[in-house]
Length: 629
Image: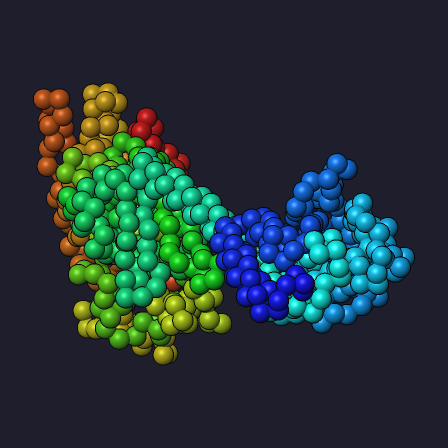
């Protein structure tokens, strides 16, 4: 190239460089760019052969592209494709070569520096005659670096078509070309990485879309209710997504449910349980309101869906219909605690209710706690008798699964989510027990309510004053305890009822008639008591009435009403039948045992029976009607 006039050579070289550089930037892939580099070196810079060794991720260099002007009979440099040389050998080779600016020239007499692992091909060109002639074993290398100074690869050129070692102008042109090749290779690598990243992103997006579609189908077409609840922002707790099964279960359209939260739908008595469950992944059985105004028993299972970067995102709730199972459980609990014939609470339930009302505090101490108006201890209900709930008696005389049929069910069967209808919990509202989490009783035996507050209303036997106002009977005779007891005017009355003449009815008309009489007696007793009083059947022809917040005179009036309710004839199977009743009034107080309370009322009943000349059983606990005991 230097044999021509220098201006002409420079102008032609610049045009050629412009063209080959344009080809470098036009390549669409890394492989295309590497091929453009070797072809540009051959066609644009006047060499017969060129090769590019590219640095691999492990640091070694691999022959990635070769080009020869005319393919030789021996295969040419193309046999080098794919061969690998170590980075250490290449660094040593570049170090011992002559430095021509950024280029490295290795003369043939320094061939010992080429390690055996470096790919090398020697052509069959003519041997040099003059000192500046090109020897077939000569080598000219152009290292290519990134903008950060890292080695990208090495461009090797061979056999200048002039037959001479390159002069200053050709060297400068090769330096310029290798610099542009470095930029093009770096850009090609960046494009390749971006394409791989885009391919990965597209693949991940496809997987995400497939996952979202699978979730959508699983959510929408699930046989049970599903809901998504927002955990953050202004819409915290709101239902953002519900499926058709939940809409059908609650009888509410999707648009309405998406404007509400579970807190808007839950039964008031189950709200605290919902709040505890919503705070974390968990399970709860509670009631949600339906469109028709009723409540649906459901089991909520919560799962917190979290984002790896932002933490919890939303709450996924599975809503299972457990109405049938709950109904069955309630029925089983009712059967265990209620008499099968009359539907009244049985003896075990009666004792349980008494046990929840009494504590171990002696009467003297209890009277001191109870000093003052008796009504203060009964703020829970109109007559103070709501301590036991209703008798679970329906319009047909039998308890069932309805508004007032839950009063006698043990809370342990349903866990924290159980509450009787109407919003009252017999275990907590009136202090008839110590639910889980309540503090232990104080040193004096006083049961403590929540936070240590004494919410238990002590049962104290009311004072029996004589006509002149003296304290005629009771557990206290003198001192401060007697004065405190004298101020107690109402208590827990236990009325023991034993039917008179029932055995003759049973023997004369048969057990079926006897059963019908017992059912009618149960109905009449339930109709005669106050709201909230308990009517229970101990067995046979014995019944017990619990009346809380009642005075001695009121208890006598209640006994009179009960007797008048039972005495009128009853028509059974077209025949008139009549039974009487003997009643004994006892009083329950803290410090007394359940057996002591029932025994006291039973003795009062026998006293009345003897006074009226009625039949008295000899053996304690005998029953005249064993069939439905």
